[in-house]
Amino acid sequence: MKKNSFRIILVLSILVFFVGVVLHFTEGDPNSFCGALLTPLMSLGLYGLSRKVFLSRFEREPRDTFLDWQSGLAADRLFNIVYFASAICLELVTMGGMMKLAKAGW
Image 1 (tube, rainbow, N blue to C red):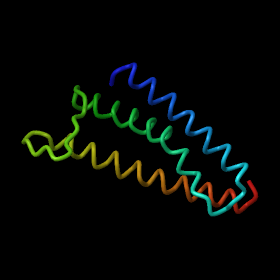
Image 2 (cartoon, one colour):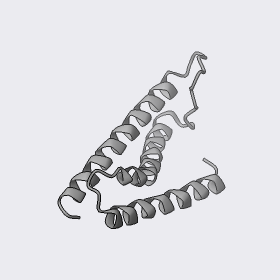
Image 3 (cartoon, rainbow, N blue to C red):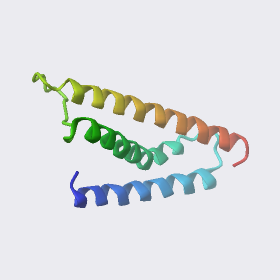
Image 4 (cartoon, helix red, strand yellow):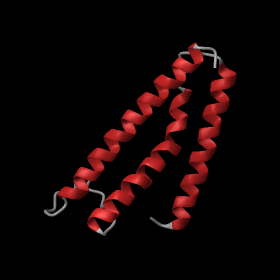
């Protein structure tokens, strides 16, 4: 991952995270989906962790396999499927948790 790109994504994710927290505490609607704004930062951390595991196991960067049906990319496909499924679950759990916090008065 390139450092400049990562820093830009990190800064934007942090900003969106703080916007989500501010909206959560100021909006007051327990059915708000502002918890979704917290997930870019968390999914960036999830990607970093997943990438480290992939690097330690295969000693190379994971490749994007979207519409790429070359042979020899099974590990990369599995990485992408597991990461995206985990990121979606993380988003759903975060939104549900923020809704429960709002209903509890937080």
